[in-house]
Amino acid sequence: MSSSGVVLGTRSSQKFTIGNYLGTRFEQIGIKHCFMVPGDYNLVLLDQLMQNKNILQIGCCNELNAAYAAEGYARAKGCGAVVTTFNVGAFSALNGVAGAYAENLPVIFVSGGYNTNDEAANHLIHHTIGTHDFSYQYEIFRQVTCAAVRILNVENAPLLIDHAIVTALRERKPAYIEIACNLAAAPCNKPAPFEYVLIEKVTNRHSLNAAVKSAAAILNNASKPLLLAGSHLRPFRAMDAFRQLAESLGCAVAVMPDAKGFFPEDHTQFIGIYLGGESSANCEPIVDWADLILAAGPQFTDYTTAGWTALPSREKSIVVQPGLVHFSDLAYTGVELADFLSALAKRVHANDRTLMEYRQIGGEERAADQTSNADSDTPLSRAEMVGQIEKDLDGNTTLLVETGDAWFNGMYMRLPKGARFEIEMQWGAIGWSVPASFGYAVGMEGDRRIVSIIGDGSFQLTAQEVANMIRYKTNNVIFLVNNHGYVIESEIHEGPYNYFKNWDYAGLAHIFNAEDGKGLGLKATTAGELAVAIRKAREHRGGPILIECQIAHDDCTPQLLKWGKKVAAANGRPPVQV
Image (tube, rainbow, N blue to C red; front, side, top):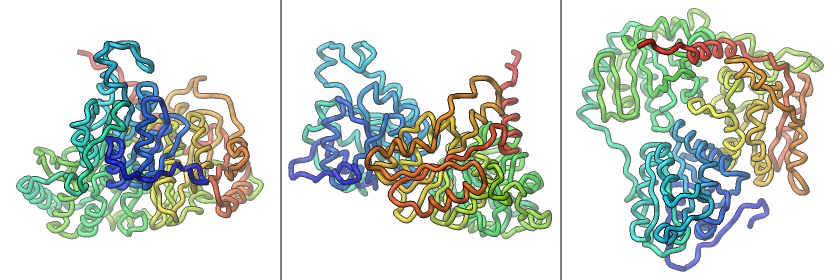
């Protein structure tokens, strides 16, 4: 074990086992850290994985946190892995695996399984619901993974493991692998080189050519074209192709809130976040004014369209998804996102009319809400907090925001060149951000830091993982927004259930440090205290920093107020009368 508590291992000279095989595949796809919680059904498997010295096992406080951490790791590295025990561990992790599915992140979920002799012997075993059918965990995880396999015999283990991993990488979704506890150390074949195994999706060239021809004709005949970036651009490796198309067209480029950062915000064509009436300043009028919108990889939901109020009309849209190009009257299948955008970029004519109109109406002006002008003794406000955080961002920063008003606090910050943005807007699970920040920090480049904005209610769900940030000395900064309640829920639907016991959040760092940690907890109640805390955070080394920002409960973004009302209206629609 290293001084930081990371489990190290050395690969033995023995023949490959099923566990060794899995570990080698992890290494070959770029996984260097495996998040886990030990349990009796996975202990031998953990021993086998530990023999690979190039993979470090990261112990988490619970299985839900481990799954969220693997999801955050996948955001930084492209793929993540988590190992739990059967039933009691796996079902705890289920929410995090489902979130990875919703967010298009390949997480390899591995569960230890029961001894293969027990089913044939008609045994009842522990950590189950007390039935003789042990397949229900597999059946449940099939619903939230793109591939699910059970290793119940030695012979087909390599085939099943490869199928699960390859499918996860190709589909950009989680995969499920269950390995019986008495087979983890069983000998199996040595893994072949991975490049022989990996199969990428292939575009149908006939469909591609036809779709590109149709799209080019429509775009080139449009008077006011505009591009809209969606969240599928990153998982399906289409960000560069989208930028290529944008620069060929020269038009205005807006991004959906869950695609922030997928198009450079310092780019001359960038006009901001599109979220209907809650869009960046002067973005909505340009989107509405455009006579053609090409939406690349969008995820149109009630959240991303503010209760369906920001859904581009089908008649003036081309919607490009992984494997599908959708026009108003027809669709082409078998066309991959990046291939289509790259090919289309070579067929379009430049048309900057939407960009010129955006500039004409003063689109580059910043909203006054994002400025920081308070005196040092002024009680801390949300706007002041946001302004100071934004000034502290640099090109080596990843900004991660939790579900709630943190979404809106982060969306409208201007990212400097090289900065990244992470949001979980499709799954929208509160509590995701603490372990996801930890996982991201483990997987990110050495010169990068992650800054997270987390509400107090969300933090209370998964706060334990700050202890592992301290244990593994990660480069995290957490801005803990202490506004005494679930503000986003209050804006959607008020009730006494939106309030909870307050904590001394800054004091938790001292508690988690125990005798050897170097986490730093700070509290800011004024503008001046926050400025001092941010400076100390920049100077601190050897552990995470938690800055508790105390603001009034009703001090939230105006965008949240408007968005919450629209989402509530969408939720409250009466049933259709038949």
